[in-house]
Image (cartoon, rainbow, N blue to C red; front, top):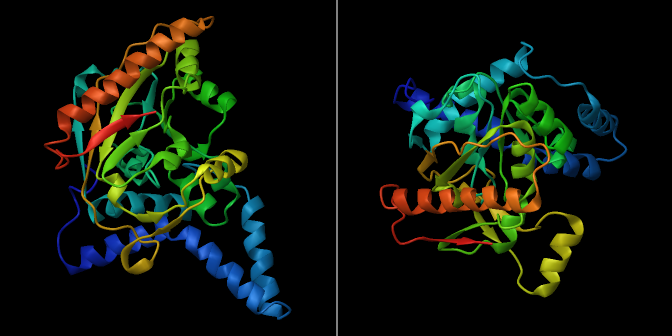
Amino acid sequence: MADDNVKKGWKSDVLTFLAIVLWMGGFHLNFLVAGLCIWNFGKPWALTLLAFWIALIFTPVGYNNGGVGDSVARFICKYAPAYFPIKVVFEDKSAFKLKQSYVIAGEPHSFLPIGIIILTPQCGVLPVSDLRALATSAVFWTPYVRQVWTSLGVAPVSRKYFTELLQRGTSAIIIPGGVQECLYMERGREVVYLKKRYGFVKVAMETGAHIVPTFCFGQSNTYGWWKPKGHWYHQLSRAIGFTPLLFWGRFGTPIPFRSPMTYVIGKPIEVTKNPQATHEEVAAVLEKFIEAVEVLFEKHKAAAGFEDISLHVY
């Protein structure tokens, strides 16, 4: 695990907290900057800050190209997992082949899928030769967050880029259920939205990438949240492409609660390369994946401390 080398003590606690702030504080930092600029609009320093912040959206960013970004990413990956902490459990680590590309399918999304920090390339947990994580493109229109997440090996998700990664032998971390799962979240249970997620399976079949089912226990407890109820809310969420809700962490801040997590990595589902797969063939592999996620959940929930929690698949 990435946090095995983190020594215990007040110094490590401070560094761990700082890593979490650097990693997760970016979204609220944008609200703070926007508020400062609006409140002081017309003042030279506020206009300068606004111009600088907007420029961050268009400043070129790169992954694994040295410099401050890589140093920040290594710092975050060394200390952030120890904050919760995050434990990784492999069903069969020996089943991974170094030259094989994989679709690492993370579930659930929860409010934020922050457990995947333990799967990033800098943590070195996954036995693959090359790895990227894919996230919604909205992240990459957010100043500061864009820079930090890119340094962590995260890239905007698109079918074209997803396919290119797998074709060149790079494994990809995705959250198949996506933000749609937020629409179905309820306290006291886990939800995954998978029954209509044919796309990632089709790309895996087109490229011959194997699919790795995973499940992160405890992730859903890292943030508190509130959302409205009613049909209008569902309609609004579908219209704008995401689920608007209120959220909070420790002391009402963006810092997540210290909820221990267990990230279970299932045995890869072998996929035969089939660029012309029919809908029925894709559906069969998707069903196999959903079944694997359900088995992972039931098999490991007691050991992870969630014996009384149920899983609902949409």
